[in-house]
Length: 578
Image 1 (cartoon, rainbow, N blue to C red):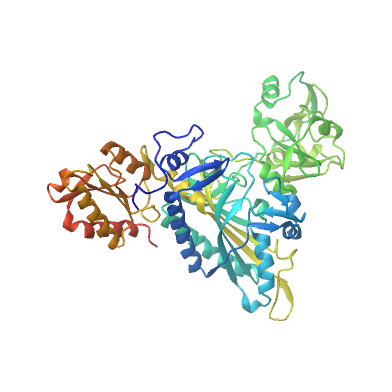
Image 2 (cartoon, rainbow, N blue to C red; image 1 turned 60 degrees about the vertical axis):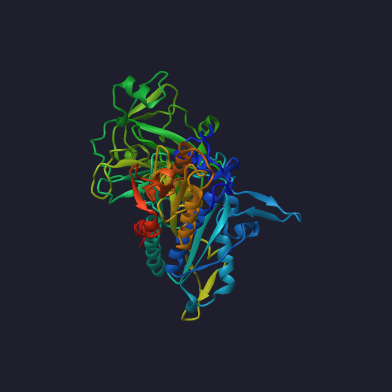
């Protein structure tokens, strides 16, 4: 490819809204251009990177017996109504009607579509297990797209779906895909990826893992033990908390005029935050039902854990009117005296197992001392669960080591779906006894477009990306300095042709720019190997060679250059082989 003919130009400055490194370099390097909020066009450089990532993914999916298919982006809403997700998923699912007023959606994921497909093609246990996958456009109507290509509205994704006769077969295959994902991320140059336990969320199922590329700009928070034996998303992370039992003291009411917050009450009564109970009210986002969560005062409620405990998809903070209607007083609430049926009461283990806590008295300006849940909630319906958010330094649940909090970009995920989709949608098979059974499913996703900026976040310097050879848009950048002088054009054209004939992917900067401009552009583009031909090098019958990751240069004889470059390309590619 000649840069004089390539669409897409480098920019000296990044747009003001480009806050993270990958967004800045993808814009400045001429890889992408914004179309609208959360929507981008890929220029030739960006498309070449994404194509290479997709091909590596395709090879590894075929390696685990995947069959590639392609499903529509626009789907009938009836499929999502069959599964029950049409009404449970929020505004991020783009709903519309076609010209015949038939309800449609833009697919953000394809579980329903693939289940409908397989139920028409498979009917016997002899055809199972199987896995199909696609690399397709998705659309998620994000309220606040951000971080360039990290969180967009329209994106490219590899999604795969496996079908099995039983859970044991799913688990065996799930492990194979997990290994395939590890190979994929190594091959595309993401060796900073951790596999962590995660929340299944809207996908459903009981077991899931996310693959997180660790970086400071990541939108996800994860907790890991020192030895990395424990790794979990904040949404489900737990800790080996221990709570000391104490001898219960008599419950007594105390005056706390104007004291509503944990810090105010603790300071006024001369106790620590860990000696208080915090009341947090939510409502079911769909039904409006009130949820009363109580946790020890030095902890925060983990809303994902709370939703999982209640088996509801989404909650929101409750308004004062709903709290008062339940018989509680905002700022002075506790479960004591809450009538049956008024709300769902969930106590974190910390609030249940710790004794003699200070809690609200459900009267203005009053609190109780010495609250003990097992004694003082007689007649109150409640459940006890882990709904606490893990904090840095909390002991991990395996070995009790202090945990570290990291940030990460989710570049892939895998789920054991079970029969969440196959059962309601009638995706069944006949077993060996001739009995109809629902297929057991797994699903496996990788953000193809998201992988590109994730690699940049992991591999860059102050001047631009440093692409791994496996996914770089080109393998070599050829720079011709003073192209109009001393036979430089002729020599550079010869080198260009010889490299192309040897199967090397070359980006030829034939624009005749000054050296400073040419080298800055080369850094912004980030191709791994660079060759420079100039009057000075030609005087010695040589070309200058350097790698993108190093500032060091060396000279190579022109008649040895092609073989030298072929060897270096092979050496670099070998780093990402599996």
